[in-house]
Image (cartoon, rainbow, N blue to C red; front, side, top):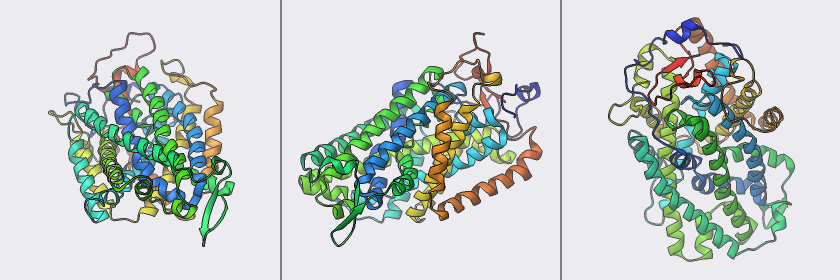
Length: 488
């Protein structure tokens, strides 16, 4: 659909082939800001990012890791503004693709969906692969088999009611934050270097030598840093299950980014200052540093909290990611039989159970793929997806959507325009391998669009949003929590 175009009547009245029956169970609005923030913060998975992904950054960025994450956090404020505006303007479980597709046309929405699919399929296995390392104080397990087991457990939990999962993950989240706080306290209590290394970063080069971290290295590291903080956008995936999404989506996005960034960045600073030397920092052995700062008992406690945090994150990611697959089937992205299966919602638990299995089972298989390759490709996909969302924000105040009620970001259009430029530069600095892999996937997706979806445009890939969203501002639109989707 062209930017700003008015939905055609035929598209509103005729649901696409293969989508769910309007009489079938639908996602219900059952969570508010607190529940949404718990789920979203868990999906940002600050402790898992801190203890699984950040250690690799210490190896390549040294004491510049904190600075890189801080810069990424500033970028994420702009990203959060764009998500908050578009997520309240178009609150759909489709997340990025529903927002971009509604504003920029179906092909753009399809490409964003493919990028989001890369992220939703790869991130949970990446996080799960760190589980065995942090269970080592009590048992020595295979990293791949343990990660696959975590993915299976997360899939089973994802089949349950969303409200129940919000409280389960909330309890685990408390332990996760406690572990981060303990690490921060111990690191600051055992500082080994001046805070000046945070703004004039150095890294170990071997044989006790060190060198300055260049600006080029920091820019290259921004993709991974964005990946570390990525997850605050989960609120837009939960928009169809939130009470009063016009208000609560933006609050959840912004609260989650602020809390999550603090939970990650403060311990990173503490570890940077508290590591006994640059060589130890480069190893990224956080559990070992904690043990050296305290005793083995504290180290074991922190390790077990981290393991729980990883399991917690996997559960929430499976929940989030199943909603993306569910929404794509509701919008008829696949052959009719696949659409019917993926869009089916359990009458007992209110979860899209086939979509949940479709996310969780392949995720278990990906636990046996090289971790470095997965991380690089995910960083590229996240940055590219943010570019599309920023472009969507640039056109969000035109046409039919200009006067619809939504949270509106400050400094528009400067913020989304600046994001596009900066993120394009970040992508340019990434490895050729990760760019090629992502490019091949996007090219294949474009071929699928051209050969299958576009010829069936009347019935397939008809992007849908909840019924109350399409009503004009001020008309007393229905807030029926189970209102069926309309198509745009």
